[in-house]
Image (cartoon, rainbow, N blue to C red; front, side, top):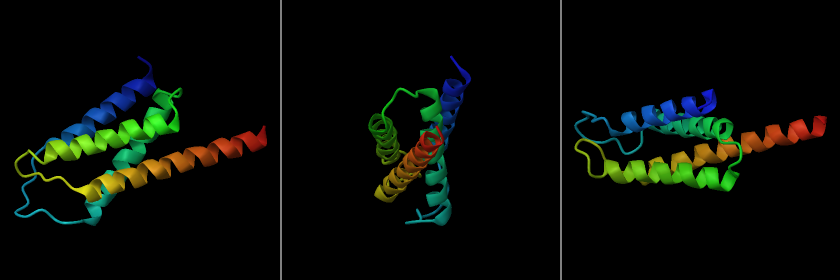
Length: 115
């Protein structure tokens, strides 16, 4: 296993553990800035790491897999004590994946112009 695949796997495991550990807030916040930032950072990072670990994947396949992972997290959280599912979290995940994809496309095009 190369370093990029290992780093992706470790990051995926860390995000999964953080998503499933119980929280101890008395009531869930509907939308908090830190939650938005956490989701955005996690899924942006996962996209970029997956890009280096599995470069043969198309952006569609990569995005679909990672968004499916985000939906799975929310589905599991619906059944965990002290956790709750949120469509807004999935929307932030999708926004992060889109931002990462657009950054990748921009870098790709800039590199192609130089060549």
